[in-house]
Length: 175
Length: 280
Image 1 (tube, helix red, strand yellow):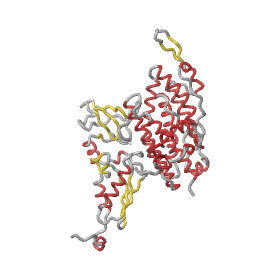
Image 2 (cartoon, one colour; image 1 turned 90 degrees about the horizontal axis):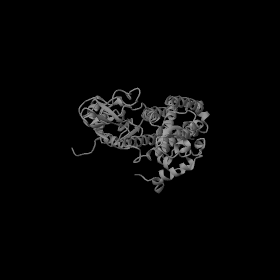
Image 3 (cartoon, one colour; image 1 turned 135 degrees about the horizontal axis):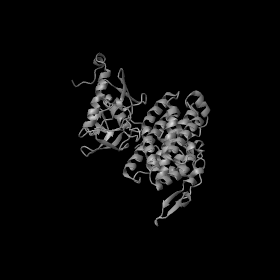
Image 4 (tube, helix red, strand yellow; image 1 turned 180 degrees about the vertical axis):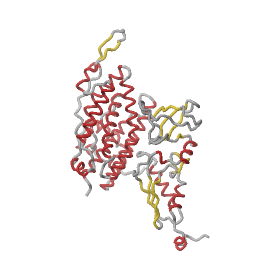
């Protein structure tokens, strides 16, 4: 078929929310391309009314510089869904994005990317020192790791060193 | 018509974070060691991101542009607390201010999490989770320097004598604060937050073995240190750089600033002023 969209068949097969979710699963986190924005838990809601899709995105960190790129990528991917003519992408802090929103699949992919997934829920603190207690080394799986800096190259990353395999690595911060 | 009182509050919050974030960013490439270079660059990015989120709320209320609010105003229009605009001076001053500011900011965010304005409450909740890392950072350095060798501790005492009196300016109320408190937008009055902050800081300073009265006790900080000949000599604040006279840290919320802000502003807004409204 080489003809354009047929309004009648569109009515017969309206776009579902699942179609939009499928499209969103193809949108990578621009700073961690191995993981999708869905696996990162950044998509709060998807609603479809007729040919208009509305997507609510929860920023991981308030100051994340990738947010504008994510908005553009989400709009492009959803806009490419057959039958969607208009996409509204909104940012929200309700509820706040927290690192426990990352799916188990997302955590595996983070580790595969060389980025240790966040430990536990919220910062796991050593009472006196106040730094995240440990991270699991994404290279050898050891917990014999030390936090070298609670801050890293992006707002969401902390720096660790693995005493078992002698590799420095980064952890996606628990927040 | 825009909610003037709320706009003033959000502008003060945004300006604090932007201006201090800019000061923190000045350590990039110059911090005493690499990990702190990374830490201050990251903290600066967080603070400037928080400012952007507050400016976004202002823009939604007034129809203004977020970038113009951040960088397109005259320096006399900024509403940040004086302490945020002060130069970094040395590492000790930077640390003292970082610790005082983030402790004060924690008090403020704790109150704003309960704001009757849902957007403000949601943003404060999000920001507070991130700010915890700043407090962890500041606390661990305070312990390290306060419990370390004499030079570091003495410098920290001097820095605290400069920074502590001005830190109370963070709680200088914005105009019409009473109205915001009454509406539940700001669930705690500045006076109330200031009292809690002062008690928290004095308790913490006491635990760290540092003077708790700012200027008044700085002179007591003299230490006996070994000279090159091995003799013990008394070294107090007088032997070092004299503390400069400062205002009491108040005035920023009504646009009365020191020349430090003008200098910072010249630097911070150069790019924006060269081509206002440009899209990058």
